[in-house]
Image (cartoon, rainbow, N blue to C red; front, side, top):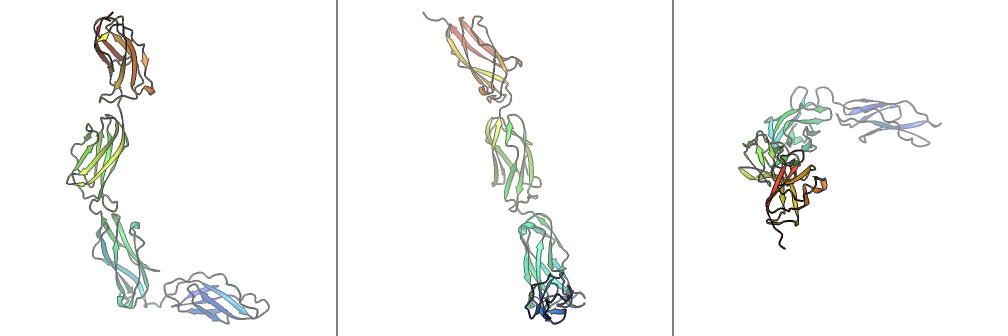
Length: 386
């Protein structure tokens, strides 16, 4: 089957099919838009088609036996008007090539004839679309006689950057109207950075000003206030302000545990954001505290002392797994043997001691490898009363 497009029509021709022994009395050609024609020969012209709309065709044959099923479809064809008639192209224009995210603006679409004049009788359907997938599916509009070939559409773009607007009507399309979309005013702050930290080790965080549509508010240069649940936290650089809507800084926590960072625009505290649940681990052990030794202590009486590992910020060094050694100026004291801390100790362990010599006494504990990690407890040993 062969279909040839015309002006608002198409001529369809085909070969004679098998008739089953009964002569074919007529053929019916039906277009995909519902238009049809009837013929007693193997050619037929379907009229009433819309120029610019692609259609396909099917044929049925009728004889004394009945009507056949549908034939295979023809290849699609698109009817067109004669040269010089009807629109040759669409044009699009606007008052500006810039917009702000979320703002509405107008574009005007006109249908032009081949001679460049407006086709005042244009009455087809136009779809206006944009390259911004967040702005929706566009606007579909059918021109009316009152439009006289020109219609104004309302467009809103949300995504900052280079975008464009295009109108098309089947084979007729505009050249894109280029737009530069600027972000809107800051609607919120967004803070990113690590959720884990070690006391004394800087972590890098970034603050971004965001407009209502998720674009970076690059014009925002507001000063910032940065605070933390850890009052000892320090930041760098000390001077804090957004640059093109962003600011990166280093935060150094000192206090182990769950911490948070709060960021706000100094001039507008309602624009703030907290990043919480930051798990801060203690640093390596730097010292040892000995607690629990009575003062005065009774000579010969068994006692317990608790050794606690601390990092340089005073946090319990829960990850310490080194070995410690005890000494005392009481030469007859019963001191613990060397002990290696385990992960289960979490930096704290209790030991048994006995001081036996009267006088001012001390007990010292030190790491057996790094002697700078140590601590001391003092007491006065008195005689055991009879």
